[in-house]
Image 1 (cartoon, rainbow, N blue to C red):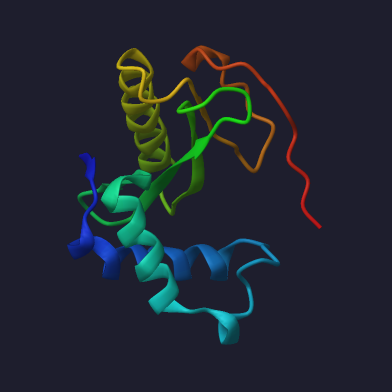
Image 2 (image 1 turned 45 degrees about the horizontal axis):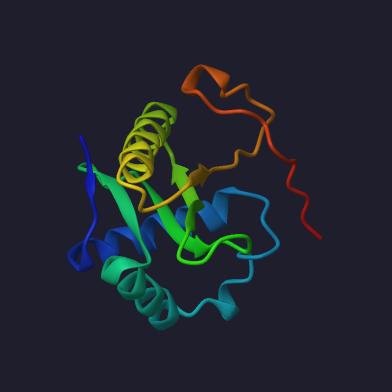
Length: 140
């Protein structure tokens, strides 16, 4: 089952982040000497306080982290961005995405955000979720 995470889930989230860093070819997080778990804890605290939300599965095998960012076009309008989405289980990853989209659509309905964004490591067609392809992400 997918649920909202809280500060008591931070240990599990850090463990999932380590798993991600060790299994994915990601230059941003692959140098463990530079990791700062206090910083991660601080970021999660800000997200729990209203900057976004974190969803985690009950087995603590994956999570999705969402952050609200202000619009450049309109005052007091926000978009929701998936900042981290990972699970070692494809089934859980899909469940996390479904919960993220459901929560995002609720936030759109209440006008807390105007749109939600997420990305994937492969070129998967997410149109069945009501999504449209907007950009391709490139990393250097």
